[in-house]
Image 1 (cartoon, rainbow, N blue to C red):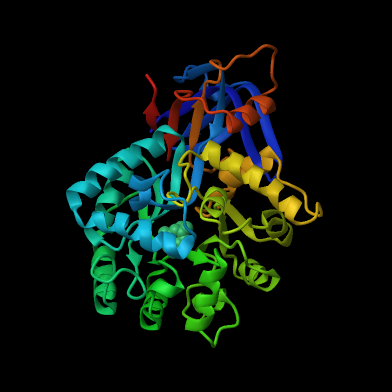
Image 2: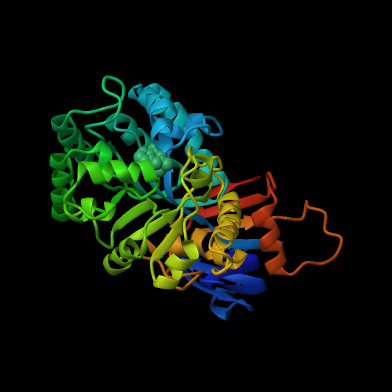
Length: 423
Ligand code: GUN
Ligand code: FE
């Protein structure tokens, strides 16, 4: 692959709360790997093809570390129930439709396009329990240029018998069939996905823990999202003091584990996350929509927990990560109020870091446009917004987080490849 050289106002998040800004700079990648950001193009690249985006912003693309692909058809609906009722009334019946591969193909193709066109190039995603639809999802993501992890969901109890539930034997057999079938994907890889503790028998959890160890697979699930859910987990596992121990007990708790929500994780549970290197995925929209609570993200960060962001569609109503970053900052202000003004809210650069660099870290990347990272970037042309006086690059980024700008994304790169171009 030849060199890719992008010229524009380059903004990246090299550390929590910091922005690195290079006005009219050059972002250079070779063979898909970033070589650097330069204020002046190094001589060795003189004459190489260059894409000049003028005054546009060149930004890191997003990592969405928690979303449910088969809930995409219900996006923006069904927000009137708390988690456990919401699952039964809305989420399970919607996911059940993905028994039909043709339906899955159509919906997942649409989802993959919408992700790419809105600058999400890395994901950690739940499918449904259906093996064939999960493989279709992986194909469509890979075709669209999205990278990351997708999981066939495991759920063998307390779900929707006859509609959306497996037997333990089926769940194990289908997981193995799925893993065999996904060996040829290049950029989309499998992640083991016990839906959450209430929907997985102990036998299934133990099987998945062994599989994670034997095949060195990552794991994703839900943790301490809602208080009724937590009470249920205590009933199901009276031997465990806290929710996280139901995962740890079965080998599902390590540095390749992603746990969505963690709204109610107390200091002891957060310490267990930090010590094991588990990534907590904050899903601000979903936590508000289905009345789960307001996660203490500032405290988690201060304690050294890895935190990334998730759209969590369709508990979350926004797929686009600009909106998710704005929701994260807003939620942190609600948290500050709940904390009696004791904790600081998150700044926009902090929210931006969580939606980009912190998520990419789960895939082994360094923060920002660090040399050695794969090229994942987007170009945002914000010139259509009224601009009565000149704005700094940081102000333009802030405004882009808060204001929707349909059509503003000009181009997107993923794994060094241009995967979207507006014209
Ligand atoms: N816990 C178990 N399943 C789900 C789901 O689909 N969405 C959310 N938000 N939480 C869950
Ligand atoms: Fe979720």
